[in-house]
Length: 411
Image 1 (cartoon, helix red, strand yellow):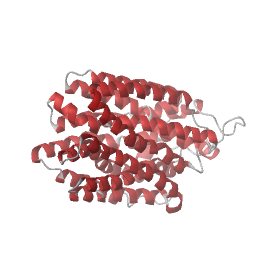
Image 2 (cartoon, rainbow, N blue to C red):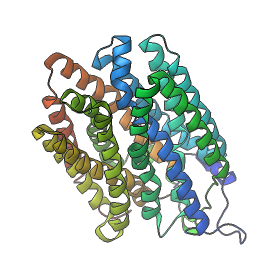
Image 3 (cartoon, helix red, strand yellow):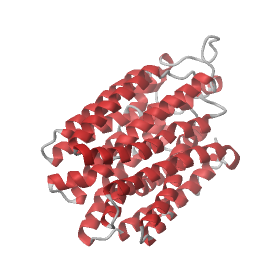
């Protein structure tokens, strides 16, 4: 699928599978691209989702409320979801390597600049622009690369790639909490910024644009505006707005909630790691069985489980209950993230997939800008997380109901 006329320039950045010397899809080289995407997702989202560990130290130093501090995360998520469309387009147009290299530099520079911020709003701009642009240059292009390198094993390969998000959350968040305790949050950001830049530049040097499958190349391209006008895209967009509220809130507030109920700072931050670990299982497990149950059916079920999982947070009176919530919520969220590119590919095809994915992911910018700050406002005013958890759970359930009319078979 080609999303718009300018995206047709991607033919210069990829090799056609009719070329006898071109690499073969579903080959060992294709799995190398999936491994590179895994490492990239591990790095960028390990950084992004470690914000929960930085939340309280930053709020304390700047004397800011929860609502104001959460804007740092909200702005970042909004930027990378909005610019994902541009990242996907540029990757389709010029190839993924230069786009990803630029993203590596932007992310590292943003973290280092945040470490020098003298006021919260300066840190908000530095972190939001640097990390937001960095993620936008990596996530959607990486998923598009993996999708283009696979035909038969596409869902499984995407599951491997996006499981890096969960792996990074599991590993990097506790490391970040430890660095904050040893060095302070500013030095921790400098260390993470340098390390992330080195890893991502290495990934960018190794990545290769995918070959175009013959059937995909021969298929009539679908214009982006036409795709966005379909009922299926509208339903997916609305459900994504709702489900993203359910996804973002724990990454910002769950550590703060646990710490306020007696957990140590590292143990509280580890809950985000538990979400990441469970999401790896969701990404790999659900991605592997999607071929048997149906990608769209499993995507719906994952969203429903995401919403229902918040009943566990509401009922939690001990740390172990929060661990159970993190496990269930993480598995559901991980399955959704793994399946969403496959759902788009199933409905609209794979040519220009980066642009369509980028367009869909702009929906999460709405949730990012509205969800965490609104939740922080409610908590600051009421002192309770009950209504916030209920809001997040309700959004997930309504998102599931929105997807019921979605087509079960590809067009």
